[in-house]
Amino acid sequence: MLINASLVFKAPLTKIAVVASVHKGGVAYAPFFLFDDGEHGDNDPEDGTYGGYFNPDGNFFTTEGTYSVKVAFRSVAGISDTVTYESFDNDLDEAMPIEAASVVAYAETAFALKDEHGCSALVCPTPGRLDLPLSIVPQGGGSIPRVIGTVSGIPLLPDQFAISLGPGIDVTNVQILPPAPGGPGDPQILFDMFVANDARVGTHTASVWVGARRLTTEFEVVCGEVDLAPPLMSSARQTFETCSPDASMFTVAPPTVFDECSGLPVELTGEVESINGVPSVPPVPIDPRLLTVSLPPGDAFLRWVAVDGFGNAAEHRQRVDVVLAARCSFSAGAVPDGDGIPGTPLLINKVAGGEIELTWSPSCARADSDYAVYEGTLGDFASHQPWQCTTGGSTQSILTPGADSHYYLVVPHGTIREGSYGADSAGFQRATGLPACLAQSIGTCNP
Image 1 (cartoon, rainbow, N blue to C red):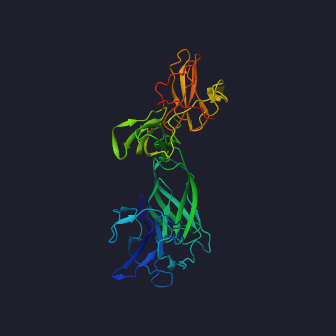
Image 2: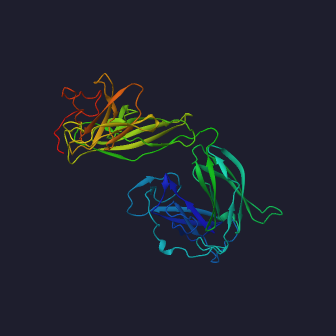
Image 3: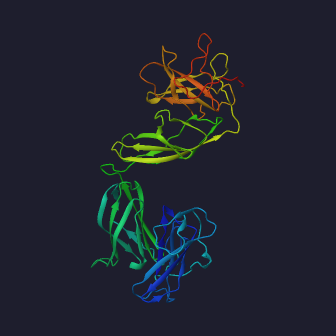
């Protein structure tokens, strides 16, 4: 008889020793280890599922009857990352590790047995097949009762059977039915399923474990008639350098938002939730267009909220680190102007979709590593405001202009200062932006 134990708390539990104790009536059998090696019915290593064979009679058959199984586990020495494990009634360690690991200890006694169907690991004399009446399932479809599938080619026993339909889909009330009268003689499985609002859209793999074997088939989860799923967000940890011990302005990269089903725009808002472990009261909003935020050295956590066109909302937290730079530039230069500063000056070209492309040559100061783009109204040459506070170091920017006539300026950035906005026709430096992305300090050119 194959025994599987799934040990998961927020993440699969690995680097643990797992022992199964079996009792039948007043008889206690010798405890034995379960292994997470992907070959004893759990199929995938490091997934928190541990398997092993209970074979007290030595002939790969188990005497019919009712057995009770208790799984105990303990952490392996040398692991520091632990969580308080409250979901299991165990009499061993309560602090259980969650970091990824390989095969659990004691694997030198790994099984090389065959089960009662002649299967060794994932190899069986008959191929077997799983047929389920699932081809297309709507996301957020809720309860789908009495789904009947067929397992062909191998025996199906209640004590060696499990089923999974993938993330966001629960399976309950599983039964094994005898072959239908006059049918092909294959056993059937009956179960209820529940498709959650956040079930992943796309191809799902239905898996049925029979002893040491895994049979699979695929089906699709598609968008439902009404979108009930919140958007999905993902982001990377960001690190910025600064030369100032005080707060500086940074442009953050927002999370990537996935909203496969609404087909409507998603509104994304962000705020600074905490700085260096101290909550921001009230939270400081992040500029929704410029995505700029003022942060001191240390770490900060940003809270983002995405709301789709149906009102489904999702939250996401993102970490940002600000570190002191090893080398700093306290001024910045200027971009080529077609006069005293050599190089290709700012050029504007029309591109598809009513957008315009700005291109320019690099700053005359070698240490400058980024650029800001400002937009102003023609006729009011002190009206320029930030359009972008960073181009990511690129000397190109594509934007959608407003309805009025506008002019554009590109200003290079050093580590903590921005440089020249260029000179007017009288040779005077233009005014800084309202507001400016960084404080200004114009340095000398060193091409």
